[in-house]
Every structure is written in C-alpha cells, then in structure tokens.
Length: 240
Image (tube, rainbow, N blue to C red; front, side):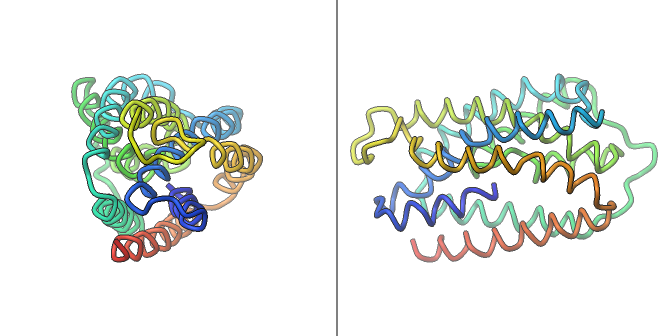
C-alpha cells in the first residue's frame, strides 16, 4: 500500500495516461508485494511470529476476493479508485490509533467466517494495491491475536493477495488499448523491477524494526504512515 503513491508519482512523471495511472500503480504495487512479502515472511518466521494456522484458514477467501477485486477495479474510474484508496487507508489509520482493548473472550471466527473475512480482505486489498495489513492487522488484534503476531501473519497473507491480485490485473488489462510499452496487462514491468529490488533489500529491516518497537509505538508509526498515504491519494483523486 505504501508503494501505490510512489508508483503513481513515478508514472505521472513518465507521462502515463491519467486514466490508467492509478490502475497500473495498483497492479505494479501488488506484483512488488509478491517479492517483498516472501522476504519479510522469512524474517518474521525466523522469530516464530507467523501464525500459519490463521494463514491457512484465510488464504482461500483471500485468493477469490483478490481475483474479483481486480475485475471491479478495471470498471472504476481512476479518480474514484484513488478516492476509495484514501478513504480505506484513512479509516484504517484511525482504527489503529484508537486501539482499544478487545473483549478478552473474543476469538477468531470458525472456518466459514474466516473465508468470508478473507474474501473481503482480498477484494479490498486488490482494489487499493495493498498486502492487506491495513485490514488484517486490526482484525487479528480485535480477535486477541498479539500485535507482533498479527503484523508477522499479515506479511504471510500478503503472498496470496499479491499473487491472485496481480494475476487478476494482468487479465483485466490484457489487450487493452492505450497501455504504454513495457506493460503486461495493467502491470508495468520496468517499475516492478526497480521497486521490487529496493523493497526486498529493505524488508528485513522493516521486520526487525517492527519487533524492536513496543505495541503503542508500532501502532503510532503505522497509523501516521497511513495518514500520510491517505492524504496524498485524496489529492490525486481531486486532480482527477
């Protein structure tokens, strides 16, 4: 999700058609997450923080939701897509800052419920080009999963989101007229190469930083970053 504004700016400077910029940025962001998630998961798994039982139960719904989300994104105007992105990110930041202590007895829902939750996370993540942490982390902490485990598990959930979402955007943009050279569907390959290389190199640092911060610090840092992203994408939406 952090990558979408950066890639949007990059594509704007390169003179991409304005009606395609946000969709290409989202698709390229999702493809980059394929690489960064794998690197991040290795670092979190080495610390024993990933809840693989949660990953297995959420993944099927996530895959279906991500594929559907890419098809919905194709039909939406870019300005509306940017506005939706900003709204979801701003809401997530507010929820993260509010924190709140979950009900002690609250647990993760059974398999059908997790399939539905996974579908929503996958669809929204595909719409905004995110790895799903802005939804999955608050959901898991709401269900009494410790914050550090929630962050680590969300990194693992980013893999099925990114793979399915990228496939969906490639299919959605296949043979679409007006896409510049270097694109595969809505995926822009040169940006993928540059951004994924830089992101993979810095992902382990992010994992170490997450484990070094206490719970309240982690919430504040994450929320402030989300607010900054939300503000930029609102501006993009107003630009049309």
